[in-house]
Structure formats: C-alpha cells, structure tokens
Image (cartoon, rainbow, N blue to C red):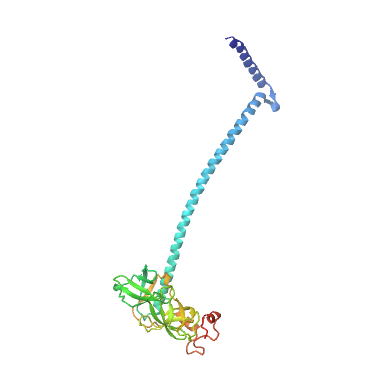
Amino acid sequence: MIDLIFRRPIFLLAIVVMAQVMLLAYQIRADRDVRLIRYWAVALITPIERVGTWSTSKVGGVWSGYVGLHGARSENNEMRAELDQLRIRNRELESQAAEAKRLEGILNFRDAHPEAQMLAAQVIGSSADPSSHTLFINRGERDHVRLNLGVITSEGIVGKIVEVLPNAAQVQLINDKDSGVGAMFAASRTHGVVLGSGDPEPHMHYIVNDEKVAVGYVIVMDGEDRIFPKDLPIGIVTAVKAESPFQFIRVQPAARLDRLEDVIVLLTQQQLTPLKPAAAAAGAAQPTPSSPAAGVPANPPATAKAAAPQN
C-alpha cells in the first residue's frame, strides 16, 4: 500500500512531463517550418511503411510471377499439344503422298501395258515364320486369282500365288527358301536360276566360272517358267565369288520386298510390251550380244574387276 502511494506521484509526474514534451513538440517548428511532433511521427512511421511496402511488393511480385508462370505453362502445354497434332498430320500427309506415289506407279505400269490382264492388290499380312518369306494380299477366288499367277510391282517381280482363299491369297516371295525362278543376264542372255535361301537377298545359281559377271549386272526373267513374262526385272548383282563348280552370285531384288504395300497380280502370262523404261535403260547401259563388246565391258570398273573371278 505504501509502495503504491509513493509510485502514484511518479506516474502522474511522468504523464505531466510527457504531455509537456508533446506540447512543446507541437509548438516548436523544425527546419522548413515543420512541427517537431510531425517530424517525430514521420520518423517513427516511415520504417513501418517501408517494411509494409516491401512486403506488399514482394508478395505482389511472387503472385504475379506465379500467375505469369501458370499462364506460360498453360500456353506451353497448348503449344506442345498443337505441335503433336501437327506432327501427326505431317505423318498422315507423308503416308498419303507415299501411297499416291505407289498408286501412280501401278497406274503408269498398267497404262504402259494395256495388252496384259492385271489386277491391283494390297498387302494385308505376312508370315510369322522368320525363315519363310510370304505375304497375303486382299485378292482371292472372287477376283479370279488362281495358283501360280505372278505377282509384281512396277520395279520388278515379287513372287507367285501359292494359296488362294475366297477373299485373299498367299504370295511366295522370290527370296523365300522354297522359291526359284528362271533368270538370265540382260546383257549376255546367259541363263541361270535365282533361288531363295531365306535371306533378304536371293542367289543366282548355275553360272559357270568362265562367265564374266560383275557387280551391277541386271538380271531379268527368261520366261521359261510360264509364270512371269520374259525380260521382267528380277534384280541386280551385288556380289560375285568364284566357287566350284559354279559362281556364287548374290542378287538384290528390283522390288523392295521388305516394304511392299501395293502389288500387281498378272492374270495371264502374256508378254509385256513395250519393256519397262527402267529395264530398257538398264539393258542399254550394258552391251548386247549383237554389239561389238558383247558380254563384259572392255574396261570394267574397279569394283567389277575385284568382284569378277580370276581365271
């Protein structure tokens, strides 16, 4: 109780002194005619305002950045989706262009040989056996397809029909292990047989070592199997090696057997005239039997010399 009595006058005195100081501060003017109390108030409030302004600007900046980042992310996702759609559309257009080119080749081939009966077909499947090179087409008995009909493209022969169903048929490719066709060189007219071995490239057999053969020589049908017309392209020589008793000759098929989509079924074995322009040009590039340099060019290229057997 005594402490409270002694403390009360001190408390009142402090209040009076503070009030006097505030009154003097209100009356006294500092530089530029500014009251001292206003100066103190500004000095006291300014740091608080700075902290508030800084906090507000930082929070606003973070929020603006988040909103902007969210918008950029959404725009980026939209652009990626649009890019994916454009890529898909580009692939579709490329596929359509390739299909149009294939169909144009078939149509041009058909127009170039109006004398032959032929039927366009699409490849719808292939054999699951890796050692068997066969495929299925969407033409069958209802389209007058029968066994042993030749199947070709505008580039060269593909194979023959080995099985016929009502709406489909199976084609044995020339590189199948059980396939074989009569063949001859377009230049020298030397006969042999192209046999499949299950590899992507078939081999030409029964060519004696004395026969001059070089890489790049064109091989065509001899027409004796009564399946394919004479002089249809089979392929070109890619490798030659002398063996006993015949040469080993590897053949690259003229038709792209690994990417067939559209083919032509020959409904007859009628001779195709005129010859396919590519085959005619290839034959003209090599000497004919009636020419002065029949057989092998006088100066074969270096690759041909390396590939030809040495007697």
